[in-house]
Length: 622
Image 1: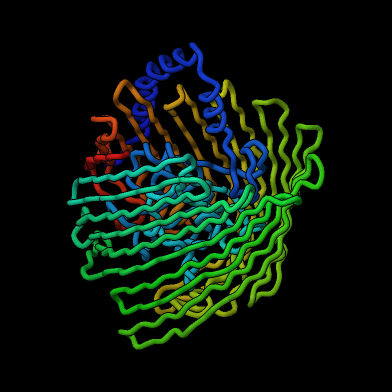
Image 2 (image 1 turned 90 degrees about the horizontal axis):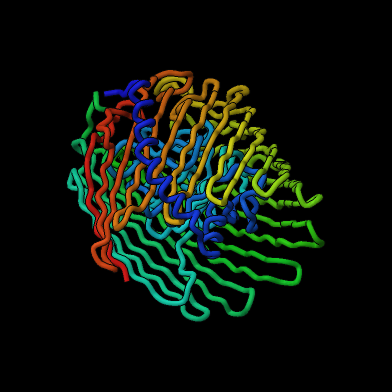
């Protein structure tokens, strides 16, 4: 049942009225005084240090780009069952499609990301990073959503808008950076979790980490399984992560991060044409070895990285892919008020593919990219920050292209910030689009897009932050699939324009509670597939005595399953809720109610999502 606009307004008003007394009481407690440590923690939460937007640590109010940050505490208390679900809830302008209780799949548009309408199906317009390294399928150029488990991630940074001047191809619409969990204090910790729920869903995980002297490490293992809410929608996922760090001397650190995911899932097909035997067997693994050295010039960073995959599909498709490379950059402060970053990236990606049923060998392909880049920030009059960036991207097929970026941040007061930015985004055609299927075209040209935005952010009383962003993106040569099978053609389309605005707010009624809200309105021209025109999110996380209540609500409007406004999907309101309680000092339980309003909805055409269901979690930690 679709909830009408009046019902939705009543729902939002009810939530606000319900939470207001709790917020007032909590705020009154705060007025009685807080410790300096708590105050510092609050300020850090509202003005976090960010590395993804410039590759150096900067507070959010010093950065011209639009960046959303999810800390570990927010990820842990979110009622969403998945990492990507928690990210979508908190980030305006970001939308992720799904089709099942667990698992996204690799076909039909499931698990597609779009940031301000840029993403694609498969997703090649948004770049996913793990600790700053690109994580993508070497042949298809897209991330694998099923390989991203919540365990082992302590922080997520999302850049909305082009970041190609730092990361090159695929960062045209934005970047999602998953930062590995590590232990920051001396000692050891172990945490185990078990969860059971509807549709025979079950999750088990174990995490252990420690820090002693110059060493630190963190290990995780997780298993997720479900029979699914539809016949033939089974899912099994095994996820493992490793972080190890060593500090040989003051100012120097060596880190190793690794991840492994084994995914087996089934696609039930369209509700109008159910399918059997559509299985997917996916294996993904990645690692990076990095060195950070604080020297006389500033800070040197060197990272060697690799990402590898093996895919087996019911229709006979078989592939092995890889992405590996090197990232090197030096940041320095040659004189007061000036920060520079000079770096170079090199990566090689590709693989081989075949279809053993059709008897077709797609061959082996690879592409290399080399890109030096430069970034400069200049502080003027203690209130103005100018930034300039330039990347010279050299592609093995298309030669060189310059990718510039410019920004201005004005901080007239301690609580108010104005920022303006312009940046060019870039995406080169993937190996699939050039040589594989369904309609390869070796004559394709790279996509490009200029993004212009201005924003106002306001932080007051160290407990409330409000941000408003206006943007306009102008692009050309968007790669689109035209026609119907078998007469299909991939080609570069004409110009396109995306515009819109985003509003987000965060309120900390007290140190351990948070209320967030965001709204995005997008005008996407004819690129409407899997990107809602309007998205409203509300998040509540509040403790009360020995309990902790969490709620995540989203209202989605103007969603389409295809471009040009085709295949419109009903508007919907989705509410997830949770209550956590502590049994012992080392044991806690949590009850999650998914789709609490029992909404009937789809995020992709022909795949109805599960109605209301519950999950029970138990967590033990020492």
